[in-house]
Image 1: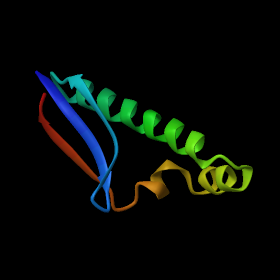
Image 2: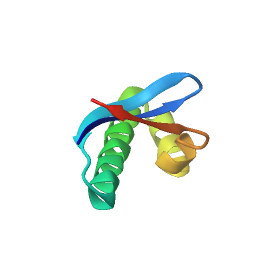
Image 3: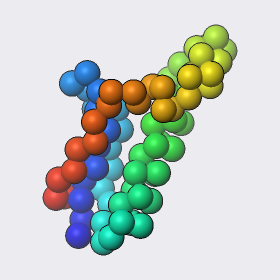
Image 4: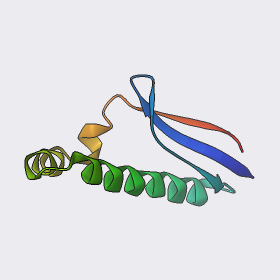
Length: 74
């Protein structure tokens, strides 16, 4: 089934995409893809080496602390 997955935090969508979800493995792959998209976007948006180093030190997990995952039919 085609599903829209999103990661949000503080009423803001951080990353979203549409995926074919069939089982636990395809759900995991979709979440991993969103993780990577968020990581690339966060590092690219930082724009300066200090902010990039802070991101690398804290990592994606720290940046997503308190985030929510939304799932709905696409």
